[in-house]
Amino acid sequence: MVRSRYDWRVRQKGATLVWVMPLVAILQLFSIALLNLMTLEMRSAANREDGARALHAADAGLRICVRRLISGHAPVRSWLGEGEPAYWRTPAAFNSLPPVAFNLVNAWPYAVKPPQCLIEARPPLPQKPKHIVYWITVRGFGATLETQAWVQSIVIFEEKTIRYTWRSVVARPY
Figure (cartoon, rainbow, N blue to C red):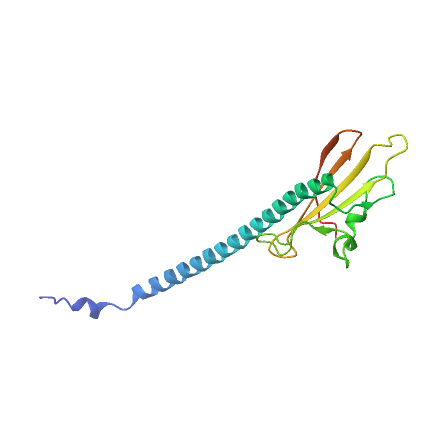
């Protein structure tokens, strides 16, 4: 018997379709999962980048603020208590109208607001009359108001010298 080339179509019952359809469904689920993972990673990378921008803005703002303090062009708030100042931890220090903290520049690239600086000074102690301690707190922003980085430094004016001590990157106080 001579078989024609169209005989194989007659003998097929659709078994291949039964095997291919679940395989296609599995591949679609796998591609959707990978797409979701890629989206999540992109958001995570954007958030890390935004946080790094806020930290760099705060660090650069700290340098600008220290320069203004040394040149005498920065407002200073006195703190009369013992130990470290706590006013920087209150929302009124940075958010009141008008705020005690001041903007260092008019605008900052890729940030919703420019860095803000708050300088608090302890009056000289009786045993060290020419020893003034300034506590500098700077808040830097990212692309949103929620992305913030806070840095602090202590600047000590002694008789004829200025000492800088790096305190730390601090957690958002409120």
